[in-house]
Image: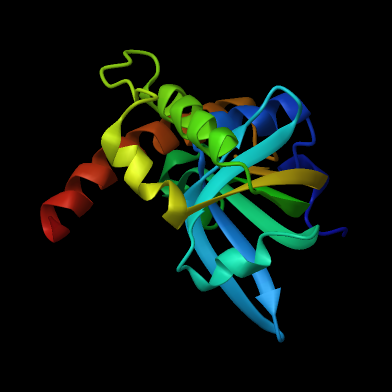
Length: 197
């Protein structure tokens, strides 16, 4: 059997872009001296099919985000444990999830004007649809931080959509798994936050 099974792969670019736009907090992985450097930060998907990001210049990974260096990126959608009790047939426990894995190359963008414009655009994207906050071009706080933020652009070389959603089950069980994914995510977030925050 080929792994991962084809029914758990979704290579529809529109589906993967929707994951990136809905869950923009990415896991960005670079390698230096055979050691992974990992940062979690939002990346915005542009109309030209590239990702734009910003990183603190003091982050050790910042020095690798240039010169067409290779990066691996993971975007994480919803996920949850699936109990056999939700199925109409006998099954084993499993875990359903949505992930997008990207292999890409990165280059630094040195322009402070481009960085400022990008910060404004990213804020507008993340504030949608209500736009309760607008980052103004003359914001004094932003001006003070421009020297400490590095902007980079990512060109995506390969895409892999991992949509494990009980697609190999009967239609009724697929729908039950979907309902469980919705229920579990809504309830588990509240329960988790009550424990840690």
